[in-house]
Structures are given as C-alpha cells and as structure tokens.
Length: 165
Image 1 (cartoon, helix red, strand yellow):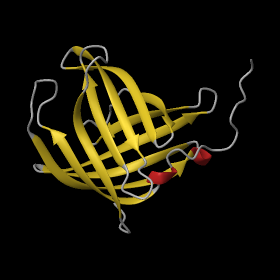
Image 2 (image 1 turned 135 degrees about the horizontal axis):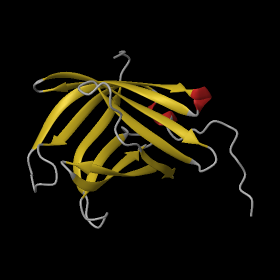
Image 3 (image 1 turned 45 degrees about the horizontal axis):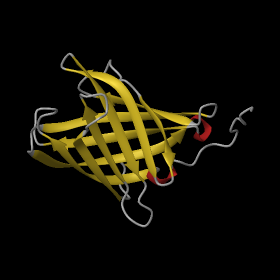
Image 4 (image 1 turned 90 degrees about the horizontal axis):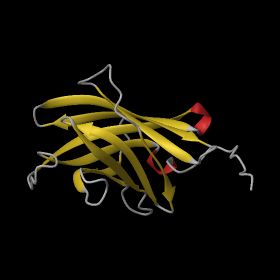
C-alpha cells in the first residue's frame, strides 16, 4: 500500500506559536535518585519557519546562577509524518543536542532519542501536552534501562505573554 505524502503544513505545534512566560522545574541531579527540584522562570517565543514545516523557539532561562539563552529547532518530515527536535544551549554554542523524533497522538506528542549522559547510554523522552483550554506543558525524562523506567527531570508550563524575549 502506497502512503500519501502530506503537502499541507502540519498544525501539531501551532499551540505553542507566540510569546510565553515559562515556569520551569528541574531535578538537581539526573539518574541518581535525587528528589530535590529547582524552580525558576523564563520566557519563550516560537515562530514558524520552513513554510510551516518547522519552527524555532527562542528561550531565556532565568537560572538561579544567571540567565542562559537557548533555542529549540523543530522540523517535520511529511514522508514519515514525524518531527525532529534539536536543542541549542548558549553555554555550548557549537553543539546541537541529539534530536528527539516523534509525533502527536491527539493532544500529546512523544519524542525519543538515544543519547549519552556522563559516558552512559540513555534514552531521552520529551512529552508535549497541548492542554486545550489550559496552559501547554512539556517534560523531559531519561531512562538508563532501555525505556523500562523513566525519571522525569525537567518540566515547563507555558503561560501566554504579550512580551517578546
């Protein structure tokens, strides 16, 4: 059976287009049984690129020890109907993180990658929740056992803002 290639731009990430105030929670240590979280604020602004087959998210993270700029780049492959998401952190400006790849099912997007943390292989999972009628949310989790168990280590809740980052 031949698959039909999508020609119209996807709308999966339309919910996050615009300007946002962001509430972050980040686990203080990853895959070490840590239970302590640090909360901080940030801003985010997302715009479409690639005629709607991608978007770029410009972020300011107000970490307790200082502000950091970062960007997420998302691109859609109409042949596989999947998204790839790359992260660029201003503290390592010449290095893109391994992309997570996935798609949406209803209002939840799940994106996965194989990566390395401190020399050990891990899996990375992003979950996007569009939360129609409420604030969108994102979370990141790591697994050191092939996806059997996951440790959520970062969450973000987005609130609409009129301000640019």
